[in-house]
Length: 207
Image 1 (cartoon, rainbow, N blue to C red):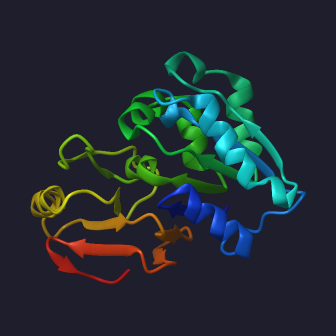
Image 2: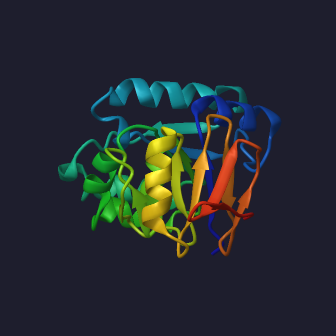
Image 3: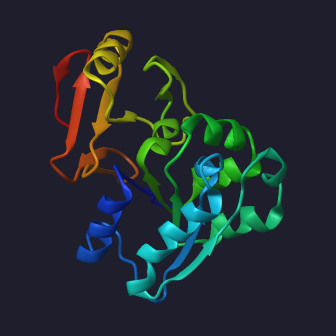
């Protein structure tokens, strides 16, 4: 089964992409599952509502799975819904919280194996083998769901410089601005907007 992963820098970027029908073929027949785990500290209900509104024009079937902590990760219904969904959307929020909740869990494995995943904002950082710790920009271990890139969002010049130095030339860092979009087709990553910078150490490279 081919897996598609789309990473967007913000909700606005996802809204624009859906309106244009780019990358994601969302119709009234599409089964969409929202996973707002990363927003648990900021408002999991609000995050689910914000995401669901984006899919109203398409008429897609949308269900939010309120997985806020480790206790919910073994719920068989949540696992089944993620496995069966046409599209799984991961909300923006605390990447570290999402990592701690999904790591080594049935829900996390279902997200890893999902047919099509959209990650919004900073939560995308945990998808790779290497993630960027938002507290200081140091590289640490990600969940390893999607290989090939360390994903991150805009930070201060000082923090990004530190991150690039620590990563060195062995890891490609992809930093998305609010309008940034990249996608993984199951074998390689591709850039789909201009608001994206990819580097190895401090040298800019192309995807």
